[in-house]
Image 1 (cartoon, one colour):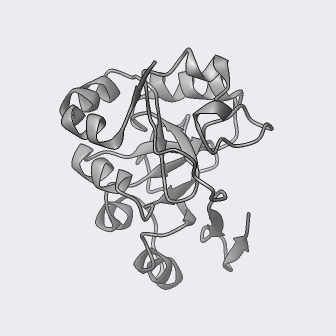
Image 2 (image 1 turned 30 degrees about the horizontal axis):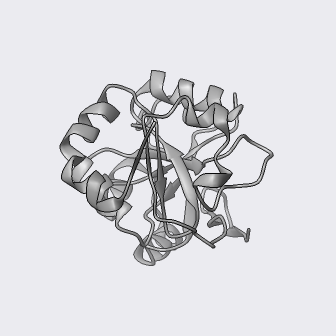
Length: 188
């Protein structure tokens, strides 16, 4: 696994986009904590990510390329539109996917958590033009990582690169359930 600074990553971003297209996994910073991700439209990459994290069925979230992309691919009512307008930010919006908008192994419930972090990684995803999976870079049930020293060796062995921004002292994003009759907020 290569450890890169933001600057090193940005100098090679086209090559890394090709790696994501090929199904590679990577670890990256966000506005909250470090995440592990892959091309969310690549079913094999998502399957591999699920195996590494040991989350066979629980839905995973995505970073969307734009607010417009969210509105095009998800059912958006007035309340959801209000929350989308608050992006970017430390929120995961749970929305109902329009038929076939994402591979079934992202979520088997029809609802998907969607983020646009208030962080430069969102610009990269926008340029990539497709969503990437965003989930904490840890084995499910273990502490989320705040720096490279916290990275589980089994995850490290199966990721292509790590974008290191030093310590991130955030917490996982709050979850806003917008896929039900009323809005529910789960603070984390």
